[in-house]
Length: 484
Ligand code: NAD
Image (cartoon, rainbow, N blue to C red; front, side, top):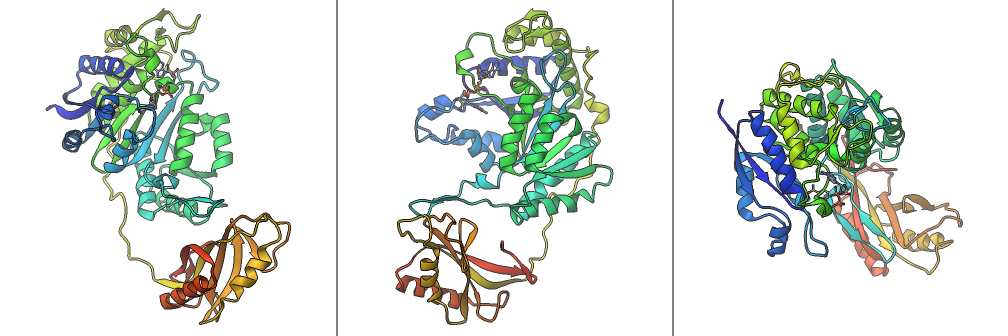
């Protein structure tokens, strides 16, 4: 079998040591790799490159499409952009996959039976980073959830479950509140789940779901969620497994995939042969499966489990009474290499060769006929401040109501989502950020024109009101496309 080209970055801090240890184990386990090495991180940043990665390194990543990355140090102070974010966005790495496994009784954990895989959407949600200061008092962050983006991640979660013989996929959302964005994610989850009748599908509102995940992780298998919840909960899951230092993760795109440890570059531990290479090593196991070397992944992973089980531990895992030997980074790697061919006896051995079912390739998102879209109104956001947080809504309402006409009428005014006009209460707290909803004079749902909206904006301007933004209101196939 021919070698698979991969790109490797040794990173900063403990990065070079844990990468050397990882590559040593992979080599001895027979990994068939052609390694291209690139420089990323601190040195590159400090040489004046704000992105922390040289332009020619992108060529290597595009060529090999597989990236094994050690942690890097982002220099303190302004001007440096996150390399991880750049890699993720540039290469479209839409899925972040983090297996969280407990190794009881060899690694302390409150949850002896835990084997959960968090699948986090990686490109959308509030993480698009689209933010605005709109008024003196209010900042805005846009939460964007797309149908194809959600289809990609949800289908990935089900395909992952199929491939790795997992029994259940759970979706975490908050669609009782965010009925449109999280509602879309949930609907797509329900649609796609139907295509996988052999896999159980369920969903939780993210708050109670998280509580259950933290309390009884043994009841979860694969959990898929939008970006923000996934960011928080993948750390929670790794922490309660007892193994933040032991967790690896993959970032999967349509073309390229990146594999890494979840921890950082631990600069204070650097250069002392102290660091635990397990997180990066387990990331590299995900990589071996991804590049279709399950035989090597199985040999190396079982040797690692046997090492953990034999009590050969680095300082961070070491526990009197459980551990038998405290070792450094290099010695830990040597201990794993010495166990290649062995399997753990207490911990469950992994079997990638037999268990990995090759899934039927499916298109990861559908292209569908766009629905019929009708303009039915507009939300006009206004910056208006009268020196008080209370009792000013009626005064503002009268100013706006006076702008009715030309086939449009004011439906209501809200302040941070709370309706305050007409019929608001003087006890409602209001800031300088007002949303004025205009619909057709003939009734909500009737069509309006862009020309009507433009002339309405002109009336706002003539009245001296500071319009900070507009959101058009649309119906799609006759159904409301905006929150009430
Ligand atoms: P960190 O993960 O580097 O360290 C947190 C703690 O865990 C420290 O006490 C450290 O000594 C310990 N630790 C981490 N990995 C270990 C290992 N393999 N073996 C033994 N102990 C380990 O987090 P931090 O201190 O917040 O960040 C340090 C640097 O890492 C920062 O510059 C940060 O930007 C960077 N960072 C990079 C990545 C990445 O490249 N993916 C991720 C997180 C942080």
